Length: 119
View 1 (cartoon, rainbow, N blue to C red):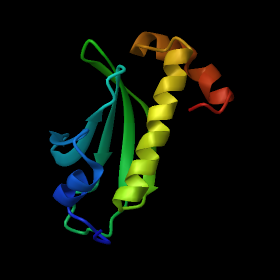
View 2 (cartoon, rainbow, N blue to C red):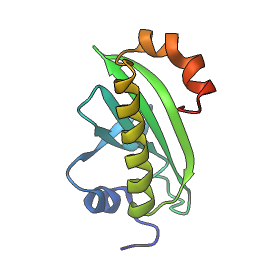
View 3 (cartoon, one colour):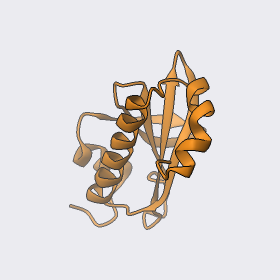
View 4 (spheres, rainbow, N blue to C red):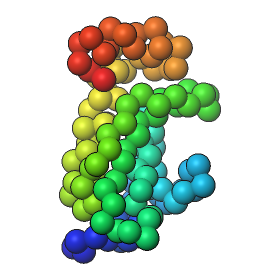
């Protein structure tokens, strides 16, 4: 495994669940969790491949996206990104179990979720 892989190398190492998309004028890795939540991985196409990755968990209900949580300074290796992506997936499952499946519900629950340390 490359120490500072390119976005294409990362996609290949992470597997077929990931795609390369342009998001906000930047090439990013993207994963649809298939449960109403999506993952954006940015800062992995920068010329400075020492730059850490940033992960963003989005709730997506009928194309009404809302960022639920971000995780910055994730390592640049596929292993580090995979571990952080799995944490985001687990968070999405916790939110679904609490009935949080759309932006409106999430915003109603956000303060409680923050108090409980869930987000």
